[in-house]
Length: 136
Image 1 (cartoon, rainbow, N blue to C red):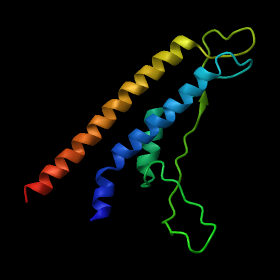
Image 2 (cartoon, rainbow, N blue to C red; image 1 turned 90 degrees about the vertical axis):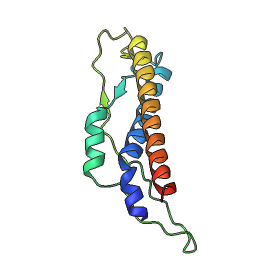
Image 3 (spheres, rainbow, N blue to C red; image 1 turned 120 degrees about the vertical axis):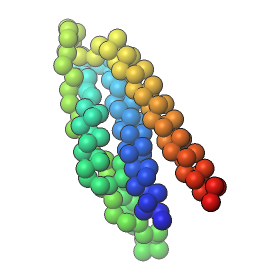
Image 4 (cartoon, helix red, strand yellow; image 1 turned 90 degrees about the horizontal axis):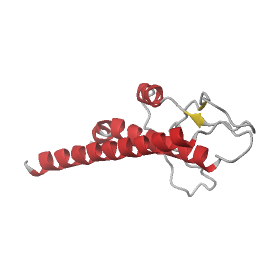
């Protein structure tokens, strides 16, 4: 039963986790806008989503470290890895920093909007399953 629910939400979970990860990367770029020599980073969301879905592993499932035999055992899961790339700089600053605040802010807003859309989709999935279970 739980494996069916897990597979039902795998895509939404992967999308939400990748959007969250991308938001962290963009926020890091914004935070380092004045750091000399900092190179702006990002990743290809579509490729990362394909990689996660083809791996048949839940997105972002972290493996717990068991330091005591009395700890709760978990099934081993692959942690999410994305290929961070350097963003092509349009006009780097004199100090070598490649963060363009206009680009970063636009990407931040776009990613936040897409995160909310993914969250709404996941909520609709839950509502649909709840409706199906209540109608029986």
